[in-house]
Image (tube, rainbow, N blue to C red):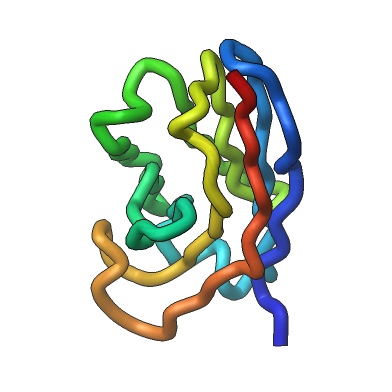
Length: 120
């Protein structure tokens, strides 16, 4: 059963921008840290960015100053604004929801993934 619904992926040239969205049921969104992970071919899934219910944010070093995470509590949606994209950002991006700053407790929810491809 799909709980988190992602959108916004696509193909973009290096230096371009994309905005990913992840919509969740209110019962999930309102009590969980929301975040974005990505997985490139042949690599492990890695945390890109997360935002707690209180608005605290963290970012992977590789995306700091280029990506911005935000959450709209009225729309139960988390966004990832990605600017100055690089070919190494190419991956499937997944939305995640779980309690705790570092997704440490409670039920673990994942989206189905959205492909981001950055051409050089």
